[in-house]
Structure formats: structure tokens, C-alpha cells
Amino acid sequence: MSPRRSPVPDWVPEDLPKRPGVYQFEDGHGTLLYVGKSVNLHRRVRGYFYGGGPRDERIAQMVRLARRVRVRPTGTDLEARLEEAERIVSGRPRFNRALKNRSNGWFIEIDWSRPYPRLRVVRSARKPGARYFGPFQGRRLPTEMTELARKIFRLRACKGPLRPDPGGSPCAQLGIGLCTAPCIGEAGLNRYRAQVREAERTLDDAAHARAVRAGLLEERDRRASELDYEAAADAQRRLGWLDELELLRGASHKPWLERSWLILLPHARPDLRVLVPVARGRVLERREARIEGGNGVAPLPEAIRDACYAVRVAELRAEPVFPPEELVPSLIVSRWLQEGAPEGKAVSLDRLGAEEAVARLASRPTGSRPA
Image (cartoon, rainbow, N blue to C red; front, top):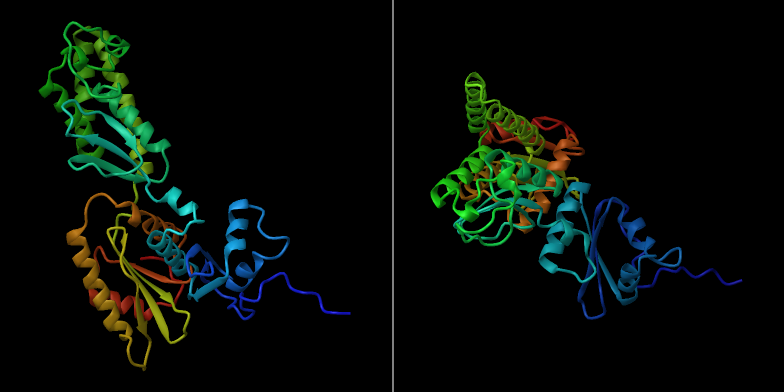
């Protein structure tokens, strides 16, 4: 009786490593089809061909076209995730879809190139001259913050360019006190832009939000003492919205994402380590370092000093908004830090110098929580 033939084609190696890493499928001409990562390369790659193949038609088509697979083992799942993201962004493989859907994030936009700007939620931050807040991982939070800011500062919610028409008819927002109606000239250009500027400063600065709150409290109490109870109630409503906005600001605060870090990870080779510098949330180029002996790779203390210097230079050049290609690696590292830095070490460079980073990363065991 002849042995049962394996469903795995001959071009897939039998001796794939049983460890974390990145794999990529290519067609017969070397064209990149798909990039993926796994904690077990052997099981994941060969698993594409068992059980009748992938049930997803898109991946099934990729497998039918594939004629070569390349793998690169890594020391940790974090390095594999970062490598996967880099390859997808640089190679744009035809059959990868998930990373493209996550690559932009969500932003609150104030387009100051418009005479009467409005707050809106957008998928990417690309307009020159516009102010952006974000990135946010989903749409719900920035949408709620935008709606609250509009109501607090009585900004327009109507879409499209605005051309004031004193003879026109305002929408119901004016009647319920949620807009100052620049559409009919009720609020002039300078006044309306000042309202938007106040909203911008409140979104940007918690201290300014507290000053706005103090002003609304004073207005509420003054109106109440003057027996103008309708105006006092309006001030109280705006206070409530401001309190809600501040709660959402706390939920949107990204303490891990906005800081600078130096991460040390195991390498696929036991004599090496991987350094991941992070400057204000931006993941810089990874570096290899040797523990002892060997040539061609910097020793760990020297590599740590060089990485710290790269972080300081990147901090000086950093733009306030993440380009789409930088957002996904930053979110990957942010989640890893929040999980407690499994399999690696992480130190915050916000207050540490290079020599302190060398001392901490060289002495603490792998798997320590971020400091």
C-alpha cells in the first residue's frame, strides 16, 4: 500500500521553524502575493494546505497562485507583527486586506483654510493648514467629542462651504441655541472663527477646558442672580456637555502612544538582541545588538546609546500627526506595552538618559514590565 500523499506542495519546505516569524507567499515570477505572521511558522504555513485549503475565497485564490514561500524567524511575536506591517506597507501585496483597513485611523479635523471652518471626523490627516486631533482607533469616540464641542461652542454642523445670506432662513439649530447662525450673518466671520478657536484650544489643552468651565460656572450663577433662568439653564447644559467632553478626553488619552521608549527583545539567534526605538509613539528602524563577542554587530551598550540618540533626533523632527504608514506600528507597540511588555524589556526615555537606559536594559531580566 503506497503512503498517503501530503496535501502540502513540494515547494513548501518540510523543515520550517516552529517559532515566531513572518512568511510571504510569491507566485512563479517572484511577485509578492501575501504577507503574514505567526507564533509558529511551521504550523501556520503548512496549515494553508490541510483540510481542503482555506475557506475564504480570496486566500484560496492566493494559495492556488503561490509557488514559493519565504520565511524569516523572529525572536518574539512583537517583532513579527512589526515586520509584517512593514512588508505590507512597502510591498502592497495583492491579497492582504486587513492592514489597509487599519492604516489610517480617525481624526478630528478643523480646516482653517475655510472661512467658516467646522469640526468633522475624517479618515486621514492630509490637508495642509488644517488642525488635526488623533489618531483614534475607532470612529465612535472622535464623533462623540466633535458633537459635544459643536454644542458647547455653538458651531455649525451643516456640510459644505458656507456663504452668509442675511436674507436666508437659518436651520433649527439657531432656535434651540446650538449654533450662532453664521449662515445668515448672525455671527460675523471674526466672531465665528473665535468660537472655533475656543473649541480647538479646549480639545488641545485640558487647562483651557478648566478655564472654560470656570467661565460657564460664573455665567450660570450671574444669570441666575439676575433671574434670567433660561440663560442660566443654557449655561448649565453647556457645563454638562463640557464635563462629558472631558470624560471622553480621558478615554482618548494615549499615555503609551505619545511617549518615547526603548524596547529590548530576544533575537532569533541567542547571541543577539533586537532594539526597537520609539520616539513620541513613532516606531523607528529596529537595530540588532550582540551580547558578547562576534563582529559586524554593535555590542549591546553601544547599540543602546545609538538608539537613544536616534530617538532624541526623531523627537525634534516629529510632526504632531502620524502619517498613515506610521500609525499601525505605533498601535502595535502601544498594545504590547499595555499588555506588560511580554517576552521583552521596555524603558521610558522621557526622563532617562542613555547611560541610565544602558544600566536598566543590561541588568533587568527579559520579560520585565515597562518602566
